[in-house]
Length: 385
Image (tube, rainbow, N blue to C red; front, side):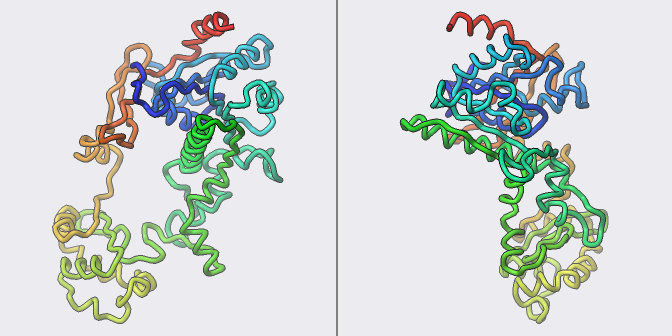
C-alpha cells in the first residue's frame, strides 16, 4: 500500500534497530503516520517472530507491531553489514533503537559516530532504565519494569499476590513517549534546528503515566494501595456482581451518584452521612458495594446496564477482546482491518486508533518477511553513493 501524500510523516525515513515490543511499537506508530521505516534485524530475526500464535508460520504477535515496515537482515558485527547500516542511517531522518546502553556504540552505530556526519539526525534510544545512572546497565522486560516502577503494587485485589497489568504498559508507554518525542524533534529539525538524542527509560515512562498514584504519595506520604477495580477517590466506581455476572459503573460525581440511587431504587442513600460527598463515598466504598450488590443480585448484568445507560451513568460489561473488537463502536471507528501475511494467509490487525481530519488513518498492512528488502535496499544504497 503506498504512503498517502497527506500522511503527516510522509517523506520521513526511519531506521529501526529494535526487537520485541517497545521499539517496534514506536516504529509502527511512525509508519502508520506515513514514515518509511526500515527494520534492521539480526540474521535470526527479531525474537518476536517466534512468538505464537503462528499463522502459516508467521507470528501474529510480530505482525501486530511491525506492519508497514521493510526488513533488512544484517550481522552488525561484520564490517560490510555495519557499513550498510551506517549508509541507511545517513540517508534517514530518524534512528530508533532499544538495545542495552552501550551496545550501539560498540557496534559503531552510536550517536558519537553520527553526530558530526548527520547533525540533523534524530537518534532515539529506548531502554529499561535510561542511558546513564546507577541502573543504566541493567536490562528489563515489561514485567520487571512494572515491578520496579510501582505498577504491580497497585494492581490486583487488596491483600492478594502481586499481579501485573494484563496489557504490557511498560513497553507501550515507552513506545508512545518515544514516537511523540521523535515527532517533536522532527518539528525542530524542520524549523531549521538541530537533530539530537532522545533517551526513553521504560522505568521513567511508567512513573510518568502513574501521575495519580505519584501525586497521592506526594500529597499523603503513603504508598497507594491495591483496590482491585475500585478507585481511591471515587465511588461507586468499580466492577459489581449482578445475578448472572459482572459489570462496571463509574459514577464519578454527585449528579451521577444520585442517578445511581434512582436506578437502584434507593432515594434515601444520598442523605446517608457515609455517602454525602465523593470523598466519603470513596472512604466507605466497601459498605456501599455491599448495599449495591444486594440490589444488583435481583437482575442480570444486561438489565442493569440498560437501566444505567438510560440514566446517563457511564457503564460497561466486562468484555473479553472478542466482545470488545465486535463492539459496534469498533466497527464505526474502523479499528479491525483485514490483512494478509507473507505466504498469503489472511489475518486482521487493529489499525491506528486516531482519526485525522475526521478520517481513519489508512495504515499499510504489509508485514515484512525476514530480510525481505535487504537486496533491494543494498542496491539502492550503492546507487545513491
